Image 1: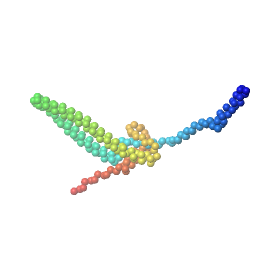
Image 2: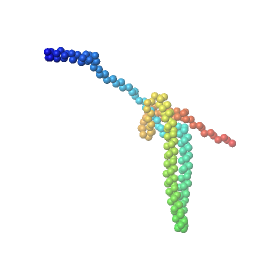
Image 3: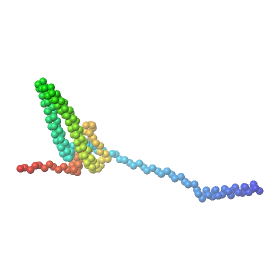
Image 4: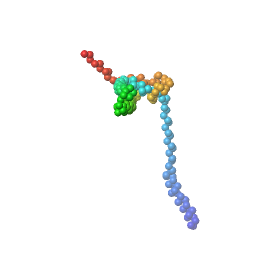
Length: 201
């Protein structure tokens, strides 16, 4: 009797498990999302610009370069005056050295040495100052010129504009050079007022 009851109960105990499985089917695993197709990139159109040429030959660059040149000429004149004074003192020591007193000769020699050191420092400081002025000028115009480069690049449908040095590249197709066009665009964006001639008396 006990064995028969166990046989009848076994199917009944299994029913809730089977019915629950029927009501809640196993969740399906979603398929992996398909990756989007890679974008097609067309061929790049490259233009070239000589920035050194563009900066120095645009109207503003010419004007500022002229101002810098005047400063260089002024410093050159000062250096020549110092050098002339040094040559005169050296000549004086050579010609009159034997006729001078020991004290005067020592004083003149020390003066020559001090002036020689002064000239060396003057040359170093002046060159550093000129280089800084030139670099400042290039940076100023270069930053402002970026907008003109982008303008020309968009007009010509360029995707890349590369800076070049004319001394490095052996040949570039002139059709790819945009230096002159950028200079023209920059001159229009930043016109330089013409110098007013002095009124005649």
